[in-house]
Amino acid sequence: MDLLSFKASESLTLGVELELQLVDLSDFDLASGALDLLRLLERRSIQATVSPELTASMIEISCGIFRDWLEMREHLRRVRDDLVAAADWLNLGICGGGTHPFQRWHKRRIFKSDRFIKVSELYGYLAKQFTVFGQHIHVGCADGDTALRLLHALHSYIPHFIALSAASPFFQGVDTQFDSARLNSIAAFPLSGRAPYFLHWDRFCKEYFEPMLTTKIVRSMKDFYWDIRPKPEYGTIELRICDTPLNVDHAALIAGYMQLLCRWLLVSDCQPTEQEVMVYSFNRFQACRFGWEGSYVDPQTHKTMSIRDSFTYTVARCKAEVGCLSDAEQACIDILESIGTDESDASKLKSVYRQQGTLEDVVQFSMDHFRTASHAGSTVSA
Image 1: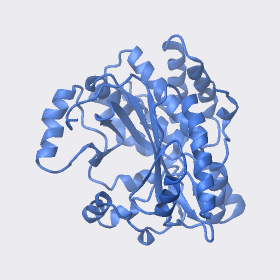
Image 2: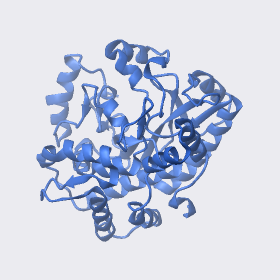
Image 3: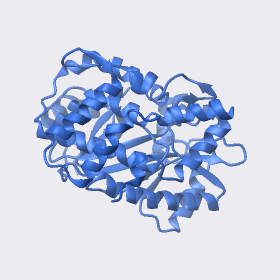
Image 4: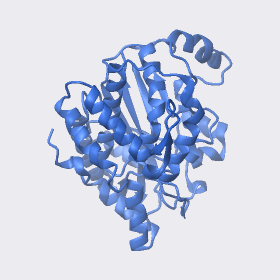
């Protein structure tokens, strides 16, 4: 397929990728166990693509195409159980979370693949500092124009996804005072942040993507670390802003929110403008630093509210304006209407540290939490 061609896919279908931590059970630091785990999984039947990541203490799981978040949740639970069993056999721990609380970047090893070695050569020490863990969500789009329209409309709601997923308050042994410190590591890369403003695929390709290719600044869309980027070979847009949640149920719920939000934006015939550029960095920082308590400036009205209130208002609008809701959408809304008052993953990790006193306890909590279906959505049947 041509790099500049957008492959049409079924509208609003979902895909998910989760980057996971591999833990040494003797000291709860990260373990360079990716190769051993990948080799073991090759001999076992697992319903996911499991891939190495930039450093040898990380893996990424990619799980199919789904019509709704409940279907995704059930699949992720089975994959989680298979991963835990394989990790147990190797005496490895496995968990989510956006950062490991106390690993030191200089101890990490680059996974031996041509692409990762080239990334390391290009970015130097930043490559090892990129040992952070995110959830990527794909939403299917009928064509490139729709993809770009949704991508830019979603920029206004980036703080919601940061607050929903925030799970990285500790980094390099320090309480960062951020709910999501992971995103500070990503911001160091030159092709990170917000995608350039184009609403038509042909113009995006001719005026931006093609010049970036011909000047050899990038070789493919994978070289962009934008918060949301198009994935033309899949026919999707890919949200990359989320920390990996502590358990797979919550990861599926966040995907459900993105699907619901995209459906509402299409139903309402959203026409994104460049106005959100003015407040984008401020809103993004507030969500990373303060989570639900952060300030949110509405890019259209310039009114200020909390990110929690903006989220609650948006969920209510989706409920009122989407139209006939499916069972999965109704289940998603039922949880989302209360989740803004729940303790976030970041808050849970901070509470464990306050109560137990060590960052090793934080890692143990994360590993235990990954094994369970423990948020409100776990009682909803598919």
